[in-house]
Length: 338
DNA sequence: GCCTCCCATGCGAAGAGCCT
DNA sequence: AGGCTCTTCGCATGGGAGGC
Image (cartoon, rainbow, N blue to C red; front, side):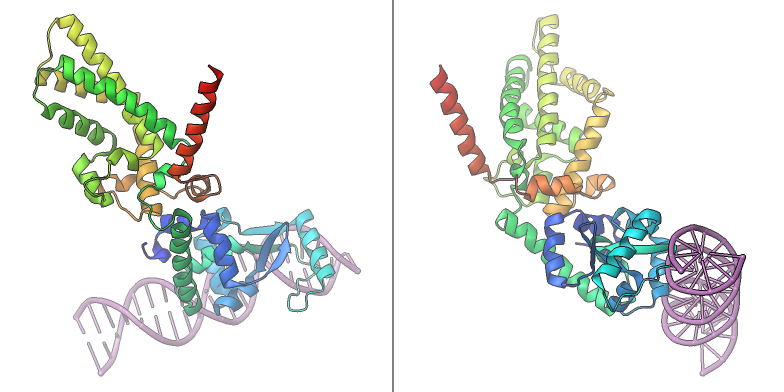
């Protein structure tokens, strides 16, 4: 993982990982005032923890206002401030004195506190915190995936269906290549790679290298359901186009003809948003979960949203074996009904 | 080795709005 | 209305980096 202080994406990938945040909170052990079900910290508490001046906190709030607000910093006023003041009065906290007369009050929650810790370059304590945070993040992902992230894509509930569907579309595609294209056996690899390159700019060998896959690993078993779905669309669409052209010509297509067909097909504007989405998901997730950088897709890297952490390492994500077992049961039940 | 420039830091004033 | 205490921002300071 990159240096947190200058990588927005890396910071957000940690802050969006609720599982890691929970562990970090336990490890850091800093306790604020519980307000609206969250720990809250005042500016002076934050400054004291990081051993910096309050004015420094303000500077960071100025420069990174948007990021810190997204992650939970807010300025209370009006009704909610009144409630907060009441809460403090009730708690009789001695080390915190918020004047009853104050008109607005800045509050950090734990995520915003952590966010600031990732930005601060002048605090030794923040530096130490970053080290701890990175360790915990790696540890959480490893713990939840059982050590390897090679098949983390399969932990998503949509994977199995996409994978099975894709197999049948692939069959259509290879059949079309077999029956309607006048080329040697190299055609299967050539046009499969063309599809990969059209979708994510890498051919199978590059993809294998980048993900450090071994000979016996199947590339498609490592792909995210969104990418598989797109490959399915390509394969099925192309299969039908090839068949149509074959029927029209009344003979097998030459390699030049299928190349022309392919480039017209991949340039259809309908692909643009779908490809954009697949690239974004693949590049961002592989960086966050597999610590893998697809250089060709660098421009598509963004922060992985919290829902994705739920999907891939959350309670609902499961090992493929478990899913297969479940799928088997479903098949059995269906059979009984017949 | 000295000078200059830049930036982080911290002081303090202005502005805001709630409390009594 | 005046007091109070917060946020925000301008500005002075000082230290460090880099140029000559």
